[in-house]
Length: 319
Length: 276
Image (cartoon, rainbow over all chains, first blue to last red; front, side, top):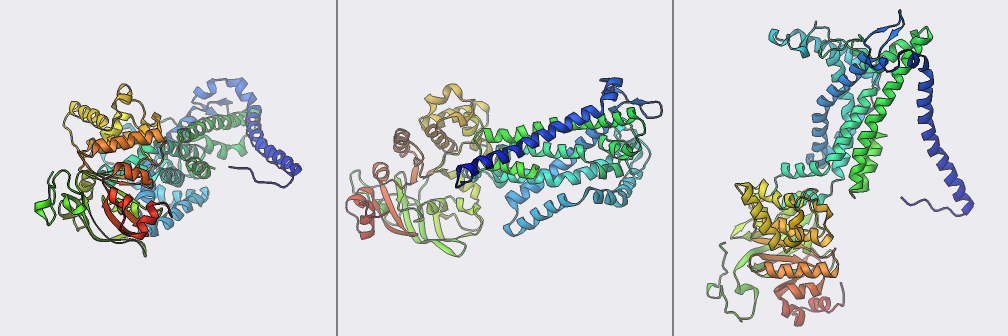
């Protein structure tokens, strides 16, 4: 974008310096957060080293801390949420951008964006009062032969991995579907026309558009994943908060964000506090990596001389 | 292919040197009183025209005169633009393509199209050409498909340039090559009619010349309709020329006559460069 025209040179220098400072400040803040997390977890890093990532025990009483169940819970719940939400989000994006009549398009966009505006705690309350009883019902109704499968083991508690994954997927849908929608919108009409002109059906033309937008769509999905990783409140309320490593969808588990939210206020000794901050550091690192990867995907569409729109859309939706 | 003959069967196959007037040739596309609307706005008014088989017909006229819109009504490409409406008839092989129950996908297979801006898919050169063949299930084996791809690339005069890199991305080709690839892609499904919407307008003179040569060589096998805003190009490549102005067909006839001895004042003003 062209810089705004300013009438005097002095103004321009000031303007540049000012905006530049703010931009640098942003980088500085990210750096400062990383540094603070590192400083705050120094005791724990010294005490456990890399073992911290690999140990299952989380026992404040004896001063033994390992993050593995939380890392597992975070990744597992987010991956499940991704698996559930991706087809739905893509379906919404395709419907809105390719199929919906003009009159329906705006309301649908509005509603999906509204979903994103609902506070996490409200999702959590809905989760406790509606989703958890529903999931418990499902669990009770699990046929006997399924109960042996590791995915469905355990007592029907309602709270647990399945509830967390479901609530996360609902929360993630507005993000991934709006990025996917914008990415699809940025696919030049000439691509669809090219397909139609060769005798493509509507579905085939849509598939061509999806193919054209593939990297951006992967980016959209990953962006949703990044959000799921850090989601705290709603998950804390429905996941059962029990540090288990289990494949079972029914088992109560724990996430990194949830343990921070639950235990930070009670962390009495320094090592305990440091271990919690280190969990924050781990979460920060994982989220950072996922976001870098997803953005690389979205930007790579740009690098292949695709419309600038894709990038701005991704930035807007992911901001 | 079977063609609809005009009401003057004796003249359906004219002697070689007979004057080329539109009604003396087999008709590939017969348009009757076609009106086209964008919402409430009428973009084409009562167009009636007979496009002859195995000739090149050029549509000329100033920007916004409706020539591209008209071209796109011939394979129902405007269907995908919401809020548009067509009245009238377009007969191809005697059947109205706007009649209810028309299979639009089958229609577009028979009436191929090349666009103003080359639009290769972000796939390999091979896959671009193979796409239409695949989705329409036109070949039975890989060998047959490969043969079809090669043949199409040869017809589009691009085979020699790409034969060693069929599995490279089509996006790495130059603009002119991309456009010839798009022509190859259109030819691969063996249409009977080829619509070209300003196919050379984004190309440099040398690439343009290659496209024009290509059009000339394709004429024996296809009925070609080309929209161009370049009058020299129309004069060079076409046998018939139709002049459009403000959504109306002003004059239609043999290209030589349109450019040397137009019947209408408007046509004369346009071809002599007085406006447009």
